[in-house]
Length: 502
Image 1 (tube, one colour):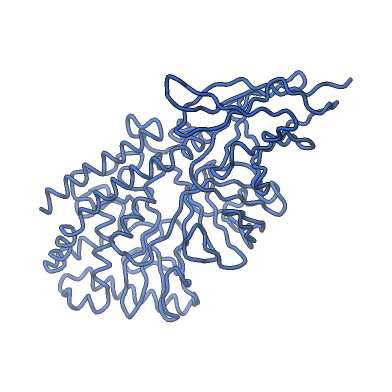
Image 2: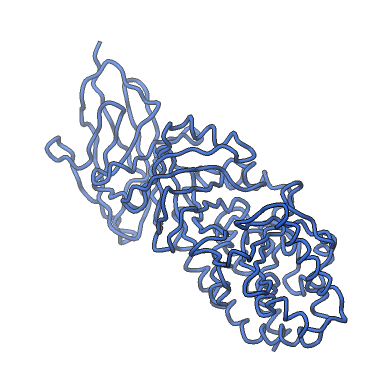
């Protein structure tokens, strides 16, 4: 027996700042069918069919998480083998906009119901205000499953990316990260078959997609990268907040970044130079220095002989740093002191939990060891739990930090009065930049709020708190709470340092 397929929409209203057109599909009859498959219902913009979004079930409600690029007046709902066009007036689709007198604004629908046969499906639509990246793997969800089941990131798959209406071939996509990889929201690395500029950033093949998993504000990496740019720190990663879709499925709010690597437009050093990283992960290093630091080598020549040469060089520099009889003038022959001070400034201001512990980079250039570029700055300023006081010196005085280190470069460097004076002068001249970051944070929070709303609908904020291994900061129960806590922390940190250095 054939059934009429009836789609009914019941409106719940959410006030938005700009006018949107309503789509009234009530009582419209569509193609008669004997069966309807509802495992996957897809929505797309009729002007850009490459970007498709499948509905996702969360707590018994189906969501369409829509990208910024979708025009709400050009939507098409695709029920596998037939579709409903929101803009086809010839088929009787009615467009109208409703006016909310109390709010003095226009409104759009937030949720509606699909009635298909005898089954009713509750559906909500959310839309982001930031740009997006769509990735279609060559073998769909099978490829995706193979990637996320590879704990050591040894499995990579190919596919296509769609960025600002451009189709880009992906040579390899794989997972990345350590602790974040264990969480439901997965970080990724993508490598294109040729260099590409994304969203105006310098062109390269390889890009990272960071989750900011433990940072409830989704803002810390971006803010500290901004600070590094204000300070003119060399090779600071470029970044862009994006919504990520893989095989038509929304995966969350991400931070797209350039990769810290020895390449053109990235860390541009000579063939005989090197890039190294302090690592805090067991077994994930190339050598251990005489003072116990684990280092990974990122260099075109990572041969055993070259790694040994780098180790001997680092051992020599560490010996000089930890010998107070070695003057700053002698150290300056081997170390770029300005970069060391810049690095100290950003780590001290941000209260970076991982300073001199992990994800800290150094590079050799022009015969000197440079500190930086900065990386992995989400675990900062008491991200979600208290580990440092906002009104005390951090790197030099924090006891919990000392317990997690073998030795502290800066505790030794600051014993030299001339180095200490240069550092204090740098703080006096650059501390005002923290006020810029507070302003940037306000703007960034507004920019990503709609994306964060989608993100925390898919990945519950409450669940994220429960997955945290340490006690969560009191009163941090939402994206907005986390932003406000971060903002207040920046203000308090600024006030303390201002009193100290002025």
